[in-house]
Length: 117
Ligand SMILES: NC(=O)c1ccc[n+]([C@@H]2O[C@H](COP(=O)([O-])OP(=O)(O)OC[C@H]3O[C@@H](n4cnc5c(N)ncnc54)[C@H](OP(=O)(O)O)[C@@H]3O)[C@@H](O)[C@H]2O)c1
Image (cartoon, rainbow, N blue to C red; front, top):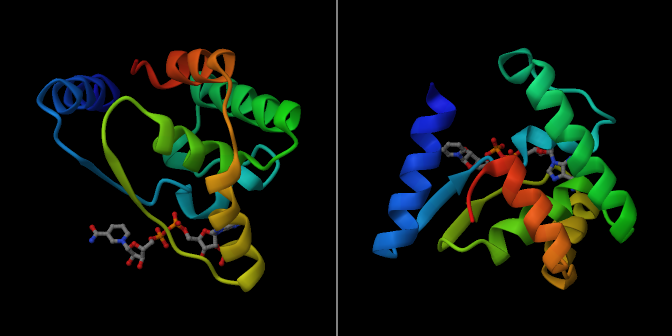
């Protein structure tokens, strides 16, 4: 239910050019922890989505976190990610997501996961 409300909200933001404040888009670092998800996000669909995210990251030679941040940067709706880092290495990795270039195929696959085009 919440997922579809989020989808509608993003489509509306895109249409009206409203920025989305994406807080905790890295999900506390879970995406980088080999397929582990917090219980609130567990389920077959989430796990399949995570698997695809990890696969895209592997193909690009970057981390899943970096793919998430690059996707937000490239997304069709304006977004402002609020992220935190516990170490300077994490900060470097997150900032280096600015250099990650997603292909059209990557974007299409990621949009299918998030359902926003
Ligand atoms: N006002 C609001 O409604 C609101 C809501 C949410 C968040 N916030 C604020 O937004 C900020 C971010 O929130 P958040 O802590 O939930 O953010 P987050 O970015 O989802 O999680 C940050 C944590 O993710 C892990 N992480 C970050 N980069 C990583 C990397 N490259 N590789 C592996 N792990 C990485 C680290 O955890 P480890 O320490 O486990 O490595 C880090 O402490 C905070 O200041 C928070 O207070 C505000």
